[in-house]
Structures are given as C-alpha cells and as structure tokens.
Length: 80
Image 1 (cartoon, rainbow, N blue to C red):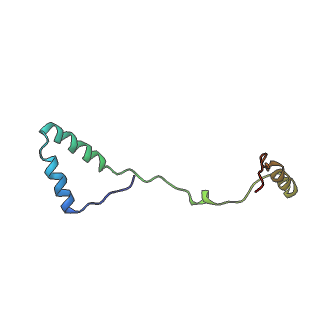
Image 2 (image 1 turned 135 degrees about the vertical axis):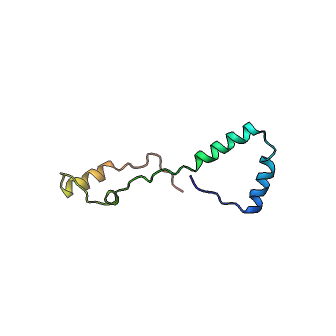
Image 3 (image 1 turned 120 degrees about the vertical axis):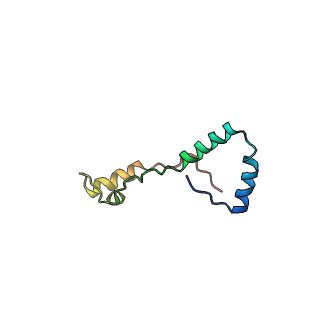
C-alpha cells in the first residue's frame, strides 16, 4: 500500500477532530496506528527469474506450426 504524506496544517485539523474522542476510542486508534508502523521484511526477489531462454524439445518448425495452428480467425467479420 502506498504512503500518504500530509502537511502539519492538515495534521492539526485531524487532531482537532480526534481530540474529542473518548479515551477508549483514542486507545483503540493508538493501537491501530502503532500496529501500522510495524515494517514487514521485504520479500526476497530473484532477478534471474526476470529473464531466461526458451526451453522446449520441439524444433523451430514445429513451434512455428503450433503457433500458426493456434491462431483463431474472427468468425463474424463485418465489412465497412
């Protein structure tokens, strides 16, 4: 999720609203905000997974034939 940065003036407006909450609600809000500060460890990412060579037992002629045979022509072609 992305982060939202707000100005001090906007933060003060939020505080003016939140300060009116009862203590129980304030504590719940504090807990939620505190939990949102916990940083997750970045997931490991293998750069090698972004590239590679095509691995197949078929010959190039068989591959080309398979690609051509898998093409679908539009059934309903309207001419203008």
